[in-house]
Amino acid sequence: MQISIETIKEIVCYGGMAPSGDNLQPWHFVWHPKQSLIQLFFVPGRGNSFFDVNNYAPYVALGAVIENIAIAASHFGLEPEINYFPERENNLLIANIYLSWTKGERDPLYEYIPKRCVNRKPYYKYWPVPIYVKEALRREVARFPGVKLHWVDDSKLIFRLAKLVWKADWIRFEMQSLHEDLHKKLRFTKEEKEQTRDGLAVDTLEVGKLGEWFLKFTRPWSRMQALNRLGMSKIASLQTFLLMYSAPIACLVTTERSENTDFLTGGRAIQRIFLRATKHRLAIQPITVLTLFILRLLKRNGEGFSPQHLSLIRQLYADFKEIFSQNSFSEAGGLIMLFRLGYAPPPTSSALRRKVEDILTIKRD
Ligand SMILES: Cc1cc2nc3c(=O)[nH]c(=O)nc-3n(C[C@H](O)[C@H](O)[C@H](O)COP(=O)(O)O)c2cc1C
Image (cartoon, rainbow, N blue to C red; front, side, top):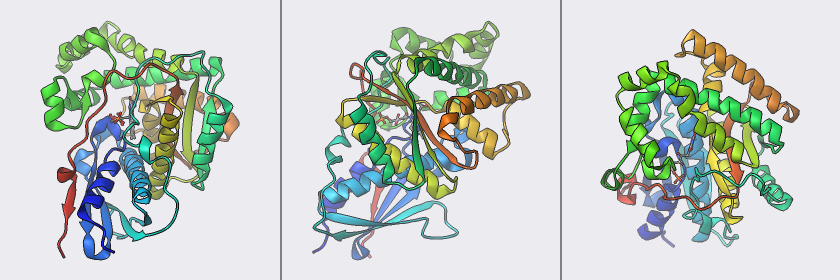
């Protein structure tokens, strides 16, 4: 039986609901009906420049897309056969996903794909995450060999971690390239948000009217630079400290190795954690500036940082390793994602996605 275009559109639409750095959605899909094949491509122009050390961050997002596709396919009675990087020389072709009919089980996480979204509000610090939920998250990760989930729920350690993510954010506010890059992706108005259907809509950032005004005011780098001389980078980044400190749990997902495929597998695991957390009504927010800076330090010798920033990142990394040391953190491995987890009021608004017609090409061959 042929797979209908409507079914493919639905599966691709669910694939495109994956999280991505600054909501850039760096993906495109091509459907080949004769081979029952979805090809998933990486669109580098939708990457995140400085933060995309060796494309690791987009690979995590693309891994999440693959997991969504696998879950959505199962809902329609289809089984995916997934080949990562099927063409040796072509690292833009992320995966060939062949679909075939099956009588296998439907994945129960399907209904949580459209419900999942990042929640950037403060969390209820004293509402702990129950053990059975932690176990459920561990089981999701255990499906992916080589992927590990570590967590910190000791309040003193979370305080230390919050200081690290705060300092990493100072650096971010002090770098012209990152400042300008962020501003290209901010969407201030409803019209802008709906027209582009990508980027960071300010109403999802939970920064309030004052924060919105601050973002607008500091758009020209010269203003931000002048304010930084008065210590603004340290004040503006305090929000990250408070958000991390408000969480009852901070989680880190790592992989044993750091091949490109490990970041895809890590992204698949992340997506299952996010969906499972959504099922249990938990809020989640990735906090990735620190880990992406550490990846730049480890995999690119810290290229692009000023000497002062580099020396601070080395200190942050030393402390980060101490915080996660009991979990045998490995330098050769991949840092997939740091995120906070907890109970919280619902987010004010959620991000949009590009329409399926804009992310899917249907081949007639
Ligand atoms: C690799 C990666 C890194 C991310 N880093 C952050 C982050 O540091 N802070 C944050 O608030 N969200 C982060 N996000 C979440 C995205 O901003 C979010 O997925 C996107 O804006 C779309 O929103 P939604 O997931 O709520 O639909 C990250 C997502 C990915 C895949």
